[in-house]
Structure formats: C-alpha cells, structure tokens
Length: 258
Image (spheres, rainbow, N blue to C red):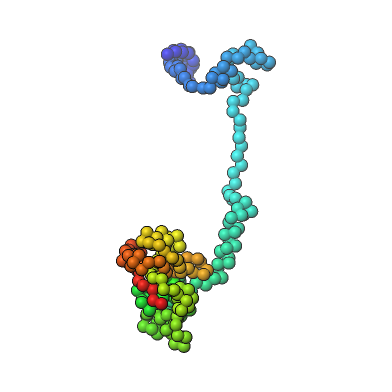
C-alpha cells in the first residue's frame, strides 16, 4: 500500500491536504520461455540504456487493423450459387403441377381424393403394372376412367377395348416361367433393389427381383415382384412378409397372378 499526500488550493482559495492511498497488485502470467528471455535482452540502437520494457514513445505494441464494412453485403457476382438457384426458379415458374388423380394443381401424393381414387393396394386383379405406389394414379389411367369404375382401379387389360391378357413382370403374361413369384405392395418410394434382396434373401434362394420404378424420378412406385427357386421358401416369405411393418408402412404380400 502506498500513501501519497498532496497540498493544493481549492476553489475558495484555501489550502487543503489531499491524501491518496494506492494499492499495488502483482499479476503473474505464463508466457512462452522465448518471450520471457527476450524481456531481459539489453537494448541497443536508439533504445540503448533505456529501462526494460517497451517505450510507448518509440514502440507500437500490436498492429492496427482497419476494417471497411459495407451495408450491401455480397454482390451478386460473388455468389454464383444464388445465380444458379435463381435460374432454376425461373425455369420452374413456368411449370404447372397437375395431380394425376383429380387433375388439381397439387402433387398426386397430396391429393385429398387419394383414398377413393387411387387405392389399389390389395386388389387381386392388379398385377402391379403401371402402379404409382400407394395412393398414386396408375400410368395411362385418367381420373375419369377411375371414377367410372366406382373409385376402384381397373387394370389396362380389363378396360374397354383392351386386348386379352395383361402385362406382367416380364412384359407379357406368357413369358413367365413356373417359378413361384410373390407380389409385394405398399412399399415406400425410397425402397431400392438392395432393400428387397436384403428382406427376402433370409427366407431362401431368390431367383430375381423386379422393383417398379418411376421412369422420370427413379423412385419406387410402391410394388415389387420377388421370384424364389423353391415354393416352400416362397410360402415362408409370404407368411412372414404379409402384414410386416416396414419403413413406416405395412407391407402386403400375395401370390402373383400369371
């Protein structure tokens, strides 16, 4: 503790005594040993003979960094990603979204009439050709054709003016061999071929798997055909997979009609 006594004249012209007490505190800090050694070096040049430590009159501690701030932010040419996104939005602005069920201006998966117009799950007469997944409209079937059938999906082979014999997994009904084949429905659009192999390979030897995919998006259309080498293994898979919760959906599994 250091006491400093001073005498001065106040505003009234009287001499007063001013006592100040100053407390000095020693603060220790840990620095690099090389920095600590440089502090004890003998000064040279214009600083020769001066006390240790930097002299504010001749030494600048630190470096002044000046920032130039702008209110506009990045210019358009500085962000090429924004230019690409703007061009993409301009192209999509002219596109019109049309539901394949009711022809409304919304996505097919969000159609309010999906349950009545597009529910094809569990229909034994449907071989899965052209299905648009759960709740989707089949390829080539307009909303008027579905409404005319009382809200039930009618396969292309059973529509008016269609030739006898509908399409199957191999394209024509007469080309399918005698191997047991299962038809799996209510698959999510994220399902892949590898998912189907992983799901059914545990029941036995799988001959082939056909997963219905959308031609444009490449997403699953909600159904698949699985062909086994042995019928007993196919029966076991049918028993286990039918009604199985899979990827937030309940799978449907039945024998594929030839």
